[in-house]
Image (tube, rainbow, N blue to C red; front, side, top):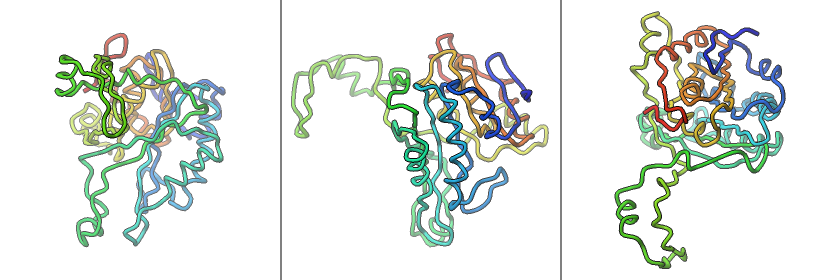
Length: 301
């Protein structure tokens, strides 16, 4: 199978991702990072399975993902929640999917993350805007899974800048004390370790508006992919779970944000997208790909 385009580090394919993954050797991928079509109660033009069918639809993909991952590799899955058709009740499909991935496929849940999107529109309108009986749903789920309990990971690669209070504490120092909660606070708590450990809540808007991909797609009169990954998400997990030269695969690539971020961070990548137009137009991102420092420690933002 020939790539629809390629770079020095990656290749993008227009193909059925299940068939494509079956052609890959076992244990060849370091990180699978993807956001497949969600089980929304209304159909999207890029295709999405019904809530009742979603688990059985996705499990064949999951089997192949587990087969092609290295033993210390990771599978990062972003799935959005959904509402039950005709009722102000939340669907349980993503919980059922997580249980099936662990119980039936054999993945281990390393940690769950939550993506908070402050730019998300209030929906569903019937329950949020009209009847006013629910609030805006602004969080999506990200499950970090692995074939083994100990995948490669390093949280020092994703440290946050210390808060002003913590900076003052580091400068002043701290005495050994015991909090009412029972936690022992030692003097080493105030040691400068390069930054604070991030939480499992990732805040980033999904409101890309002026990238080369957007502008070039509009000039061509082509439809922009309606469910684009914000770059901050793959950047976080690629930094934490891979090292230079590792291979990242996205089997539902869409506009290929994952590949673009992987390229900028010195990782090899494979993108698979079944829609011909989306696959071709995703190459527009690489006309304007940011360049990071050689050790991949820079930032896109």
